[in-house]
Length: 317
Ligand code: ADP
Ligand code: MG
Image (tube, rainbow, N blue to C red; front, side, top):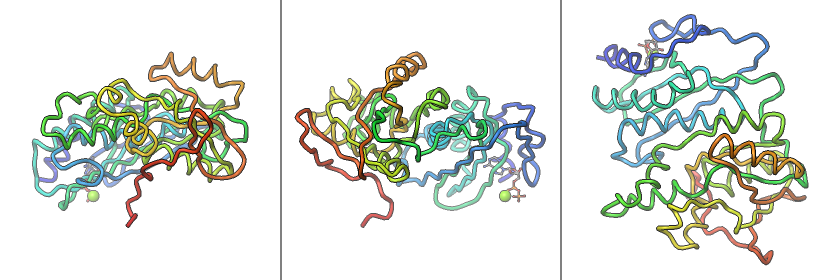
């Protein structure tokens, strides 16, 4: 039965790469790292009821489990290559595994990302993916390089996933498909991350909320940041369904956006905005790096805005 499930996953996710000497089927995968490249490696776990709502479609779970990992590689400016998938399932449900593998493959195939192994166990529904990507030595985008005077920018729009989660509580969520789609099928900004290599001074992906994640970047860089609330990129889908106060709340504190938040020298902000507009998704200037510590959100008159919600924290009381 377990072999059967693994074989199903293998069939759905078949991507051929010359650098995979041995993939699924042996005790360990064997791969060749290209000469002169460094590996960027990340792992993320999705637990049912914590990272995705109970009842999420299997294909969406498969997509999201990979997307959150590709987002970590994107934040490093890395090029995705290989993945491992550890699945814990309550029952041996073939239809579920087919759906999950299909959703995973939908995102993996365009990147030519090969699933090279994993593990399959019984227990509460939990999906762990590990990804490996390539970077040129010394070129990975880190959280630690932001400098006072840099501009803070973010790709895409913020708050849609949190808005989508709120919409799921509605009896009929069908008017909000665009928002729910952003929750269930986040777009990792892989090409944007690659385009930022050699330009961004620091970068992080927004998984827990803008204020929380930019806070991590600031802490690692030893700086503070000021965010102009009026500049936050918010989607027309979110603005059509939520009042300003909620929309700002989602954009500042909502998790699961998987956009990139990064810093660039002020004189390169226009060039970066133009580059990322061409790639798709775009990027918006939302603030600046300042001396001190922490993230300060200000309104048009320069007054402090207190974020209504803190970022997601698994161990918060
Ligand atoms: P072992 O007992 O040696 O760990 P497994 O039966 O767990 O072997 O796995 C057999 C092969 O199938 C290994 O190559 C492993 O990487 C792969 N595999 C197991 N589960 C998965 C999965 N969920 N997705 C992809 N590959 C898997
Ligand atoms: Mg095993």
